[in-house]
Every structure is written in structure tokens, then in C-alpha cells.
Length: 300
Image (cartoon, rainbow, N blue to C red; front, side):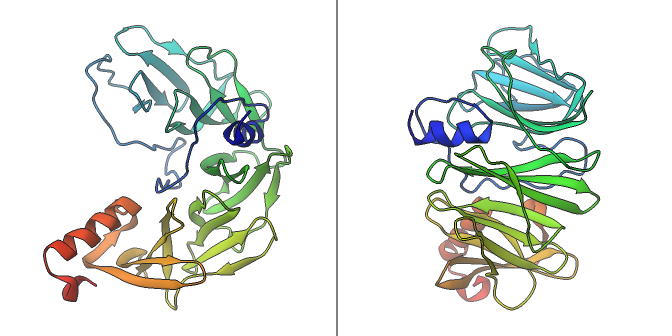
């Protein structure tokens, strides 16, 4: 089994995936305002039925479409009308995504007969064979809202909402050790992770600080410049993107940086911008458009 197989085995307590690498790069997920979280934007693929209910998610090759509701997940195969309905065992959905390089779904589930909080791996070819990672000793109503993981480090971090504006982070590794990691915040915003190092990033929504946690040594430190900042994401090349925000948590300026080097401002927004509109990709596009328009003096 290659490195990817090892990390995903740790991730889902027995998950075995062959070949390839899944990278947590510049995809950034937000804490949900409902009981389930959307990852992909709404798309329409004419190879699938025009389903009105739920939120649609397409696998990386568009072979499958999942329609996700709070208490139901239907998986359609391209060209076929009838879906396969997952047996959620009376649990509710808090998180869903298709893996970026293969036809496998990752589903955050909570509740049910045993009040479980778990992350399940679902193979649409054999959906009855669910493989789970269970998180124990969490308050009733807790749920997974975000995941960051890396093939090269064999480590997975899961963000769990345990109350209104209160979150915990759990870490698992190739030794099957799933445990809580204590952070310098409970109101955690976005999270990210380097591909090739056990370096985990998160922000404190209340104070506006961005932190780096060294999972190997166990230390942490704030990495943002003076001011109030929020994390946007990290890339495979270990670039870190953050934004300076106002008192309403709206973005004013975008920054690009590296550990041990620091941050440089790369873009200034014309108007305060909601964080929900900003991703790593949008910052890169804004940065390039500013250069192309010759407005670097205005925008940077």
C-alpha cells in the first residue's frame, strides 16, 4: 500500500484506497449555518435527473451525483434515473464531499441510535460497506463540519462543532490514534494543512488571530501581522493566504505569505467584502487582474 493508502486508513479507521494522492490545497470550507454543509457550488449536469430537492454534488469525473439533504443521501449514476439511497441508520448529515481524484464520498454523520459523531467513507459501487471513524466524548448534538488531511504526513484533522460558536479539533494518524488537539480558540473559523508537513492552520474568529499548530512537536504560534486577520487557505506550495478584516469580519486586504518569511499585501478590496465570497482562487484572480489592469498602485 502506498502513502496515500496509509493516511486514508488512519483517516477512516480501516479505509483502504489504492493509488493516487488527495491533496487538501486551496479548497476552503466554512462552518455551516444549517445542519449540513455544502462544499461544491450548485451545478447542472444533463446526464443526471433534474432533482429539485437537496444539494447536488458531483464526483470528480461526473460519473456520480449525490443529492444531499439533512436526513437523506441519494447517489445517482450518470445515465440512470434511479438512485441508490444510503442507509444513514437514523443519523443526520453534517458534511459531504467527493474526493478530488476518485469516486469516493466522505460524509460527516451525527445522531442516530447511539448519538454517534463520525466520518464515513462511502464507495458508490458498494454503499452498504460503510467505513467509519468515530469521535467519542463530545457533547450531544456535536457534528463534524470540516476536514483537512494530507497523504505525505499521514495525519488528518477534523473540525467538530460542539455548540453555538464553539468548535474542537480532533487529529488522527497512521497509528490509529484519534484524539482531541487543544487549540488557542474555541470559535474556530477556517482550517488548512500543509501537504507535506504536519502543520495545521486555523483562525480565532473572536480575536482575529491566525495560528499554526506543529503536530510533530506539539507547539503553536500566531503567524499573522499586527491587526485582525482571518485564514483563507493554504496551497501545495506552502503559501498561506489570509485577509485583514474590519470589526464586522469583512475583508479589507488580502495577504500572501510563508512560514519563516512573513506576509505581503497582494490586494486591497474596493469595498469591505464578505468572507464567504473569498477563496484562495479568488485572491489569486484578483491579484492577477490588478496586475493586468496596471492598477498595482491602487490595489496593492
